[in-house]
Amino acid sequence: MDVAEQKIEIELPNQAFSFLAKAKEIKPELDSRFHNITGNAHWKLGNYYEAISAYEQSIALDGKQNALLLKIADFYDKERKPALALKFTELYLKNAPTDKARLFRAAILSRRSGKEDVYLSYIRLLESDKSFASEEEALQTSLARNLKLKKWKEAEELSLRYLPFFPRVEGMYETLIIARRGKKSPLLEEAYMFACVAFKEETRYFVRYGVYLQEQERYLEALSMFRRAFYQALKYNVQSDWGEFLFLLRQTYTKLGWVEDALAMDVLVSDIKNKMNLRDQDVQNHLNTYRKNREYLLFGVYWFKDKDAILADEYRKLLRERDEETSEKEFLFVIGPFAVDRMEF
Image 1 (cartoon, rainbow, N blue to C red):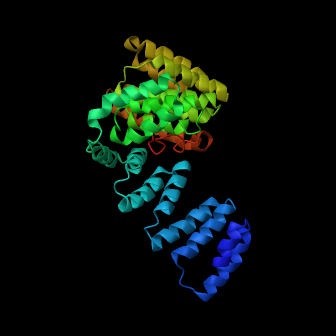
Image 2 (image 1 turned 180 degrees about the horizontal axis):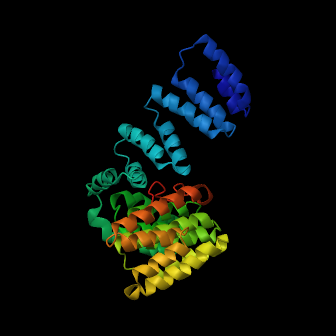
Image 3 (image 1 turned 180 degrees about the vertical axis):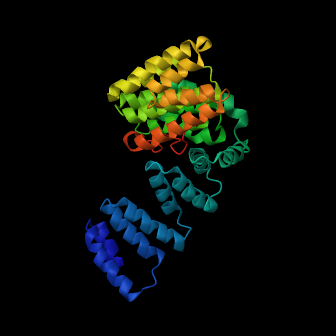
C-alpha cells in the first residue's frame, strides 16, 4: 500500500490499483487505509463518485476521520444532495459537537432536506450560546463600516465567524451577500442559498438569487427560484412585489423560448391584478388554455382549494402529471435549495 500511495503522490494514480490488488491478496481483510488510498486514486483520476464510495467504506471502519467526513459532506453538498451532506455532517458533529460553523451548516442542510424539526433544533442550539449576545449592536456597526469602506474580505470573514451565533439575524446574511458580491467571490451563490433557507417563508431572497442566476445565463435555475417565490407568495399570502417576480418568470420563459408559458404569464398577471372581479369560470377557462403551465395550474389549485375540493384535486393531479412529464427537461426537484419540496398546496 505504501507503493500505491507513492504512485498517487507522483501523479500516476492508474498504477496504484495494481499495487492495491496485490495488497488485497496479501491481506484480504481490508482496513480503512486501503479504502482511503483507493479513494485517493479515484479522486486523482476525476472519478469522484468511485472515490466517495471508497471513502464511505473507510468511514464505516473508522468513523473518527473528521477531515474525510467533511470532504464527503462537502462533496454531496456541491452535488445538490443535501440529505447525504447532512448525514456525513452529523457523523462529523458526533466527533466535534462544538464546531459552530458545521452546526450552522447542519441546520441549513436539515431545512433543505425537508427536516424542519431538526432545523429548528439546530437553530435553538446555536442561539442558546449567548457568548456574543451583548455585542450584537457593535458587531452590526463593524459590519456596516467594513461594507462602507469596501473591505469585502473583512466583512465576509466577520459575518461568517458570527453567523452561527446569530442564525436568524437578517443583517448577517445581507452582509455576507454584499461582501461576496463585492469581492466577486465564487461563493456568492452559497450566500444566497443560506439566506433563502433562513428566510424560507419570504420571497425576496429567492428573487435576488434568481436574478443572480439570470445574470449567469442559468435560466432553468433562475426559473426554479422565481417559481419558488411565486409559490411562497401564494402559500403564505406574502405582501411583496408580486409584479416583480411574475415579470421575472415571464422574462425567463422568454429567454428559454417557451412561448406558451410566457403567454400564460400574461394571463396570470392580468388575473391576479383583477382578482377581486375574477370569476371561477374565468380561471377554469384559462386553465383549459394553459393546462401545461406550472404557475397557472398552481394558481388554479390555490384558487379552488377552499371553494371546490373536487376541482382543486383535479388541478393537483394535472400539476403532478405535468411535473412528471417535464421533470427531466426542467430539472425539477433537482435545482434549488428546496429541490425535494414539490411546491404543492
